[in-house]
Length: 163
Image 1 (tube, one colour):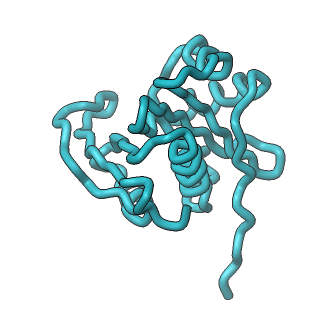
Image 2 (tube, helix red, strand yellow; image 1 turned 90 degrees about the vertical axis):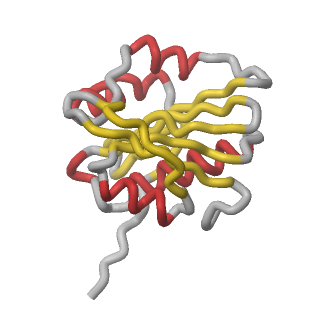
C-alpha cells in the first residue's frame, strides 16, 4: 500500500524564521555556512530591477523542514543553497523547495536556472534530473570538508517539468 504524504508548506521566509534557518543550516554539513548577516540581508533587501534574492522555508507540522536561497540576475537564476532536515529527506521537501524556487524565478523574469551540486550527492542529482536539469559541467575540487567536485546543472524554465 502506498502512503501519500502531504507536501510541506512552502513560503517566503521572514525575520522570525532566521534562528531556525541558522539552526538547520548548522546541522547540515553540506550546506554553505553563511553568517547570520547574509540571511538577514536577503530577508531585508529591497528588490531592484536587475537583482532579486529570496529565502524560502518548508514548514511541516509547524517545524522547519528545509530552506532554499535563490538569486535572479536579469534573466538568469541560481539556486544558491538548499538544505533539508536529515529526518525529512526523501519525503518531497527538496522537490517542493526546488519547485517553489523555479516558479519564483520564472515570475521574476528568469529564463533559466543554474545550480551546483556535490558530485557525491546522487539523491540531489537525481531529483534535479527529474525536474528537468541537465548536467552542463564540472568544477574539480570545488567543495571542501569533505572534498568533492561540483556538478554544474541548468534548466530552461520554459521547459521545466510541472511548473
